Image (tube, rainbow, N blue to C red):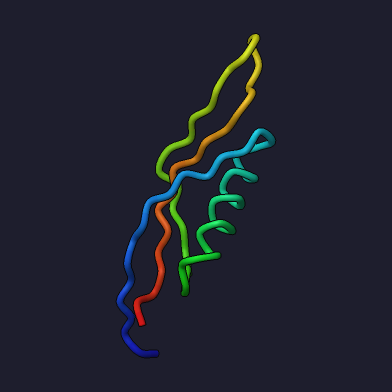
Length: 68
């Protein structure tokens, strides 16, 4: 196994469905323009409450990708 160098980027995924969907939405969108994404780390989960119920989820993520 060779040594690797990684770079971090911070993104925010969002969804009206769930925290899981917010994470997946963020990763999928980032993967359209960022190569070699290998891991993610959640930094913050927040949401919007409307009429006493959760209406929207946002997850702040750090994504790690390998530098060529």
